[in-house]
Length: 375
Image (tube, one colour):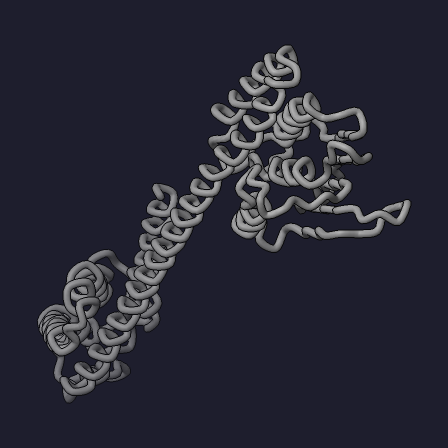
């Protein structure tokens, strides 16, 4: 914000410097005119009028009347102000500038009659002074300067309207960001209980089967909770930390699996490349694989492969498919819908997700989820 203010001030100063240098284009164009500080200062009355009109309009009239839809009052006050400035310019020109111009025109240079000599008494070989030039009529003067004032008012309105438009756009953007953040926070708050519910269900089952494994599961759960508490506060975290979290979760889930279920977990996410990913985005995919890919009596498998290249991070999960019945309440069934919502919020236009049943190598049905997150 401070940088934008400095840029705005610099632009205004540069514009007004150019405006106040404009009179120099007309001073000294004639052979009998010279550039001098007093002459320049007398010619600056018009740029000064422009500055007064511009800042009175932008700082008071436009915000108070135009932006509050008091159009009649705005037009009347602007016209009166412009007329007053034009009248002041005319009086200044008539009292200060015009006499000085006439005095210069009466100066006598080489070949011109001396001052105070009547044209009829000019010595031989000396030309009389040229007749004094008359300035523009009051009507022409008024129309010319009032048109310039109207142009300044138009510029002031455009500047203020553009500035207001930018402020409104910024406010809308901030409101949209706050809405998105609120939606993401709500999804995170749903993910944590969902994850804990599935994990506690597994630990509960282990208590009746193997208390030693149940104790180990509680220890692993504490490490996972530490990740939830300290690594899950931002919208994006290190991809290597998220993969490490998934490994811990997979090891926890494997404690209660029977020998007929084969689980493989592979990843090649580099730790030092600074690649970021949304936290807890992939955990729902892994949970879904354990929920629908494990059978207590039949051979089953879960394959998880997470890789990266110069363009994207790829998460490929394949598992045998054993759909749960309506009576199975493990988990809330909202995991994949949460993933879709978060992808639309955080990776809109920068992801692809193909999921569904495909035919496996031996003709069995396999559930396949292929998610790609593009940098």
